[in-house]
Every structure is written in C-alpha cells, then in structure tokens.
Image 1: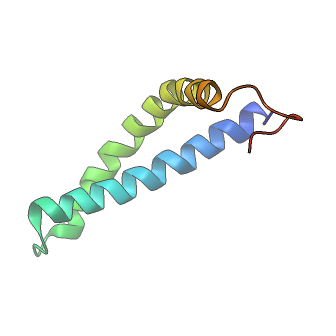
Image 2 (image 1 turned 90 degrees about the vertical axis):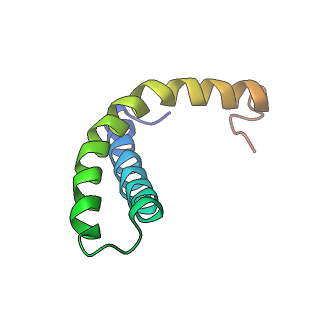
Length: 80
C-alpha cells in the first residue's frame, strides 16, 4: 500500500496530465488550428485541472474497488 503523500501526488500528476491532454485534444477537435488555440487551451486546462483533481480523489477509491472486484482477491499479495 502506498503512503497518503504518494497517492495524493500521483493524483495531482494524473489529473494534471489528463486535464492537459483532454483539454488540448477536445479544444483542437472543437476549434481546430485557430490562431488563438494555445490561449484557449491554456484557459481550458487551468479550469479543468482543479476539477479533475477533486473528481479523481472521489473516483479513485471507486475505481480501485471496481478493479478489485473484477480481478478478485490478490494471489500472493499481487494482482496480475
């Protein structure tokens, strides 16, 4: 089991990367290569990251629970 600090830092990285990538991809799909695309993307990213972080804190335990239910109890302490 990871420490609480590691889990929070990982959630910060995961949510930041996902917000960065998804806001960029969806912004490009929506606006295309508009001249102000980078400005729009930055605004969307700054808005999306805190939301993604808070949501990831709530969704993460559910996702781990669901994965545990699908995979069943660990064998020798490891899933795989």
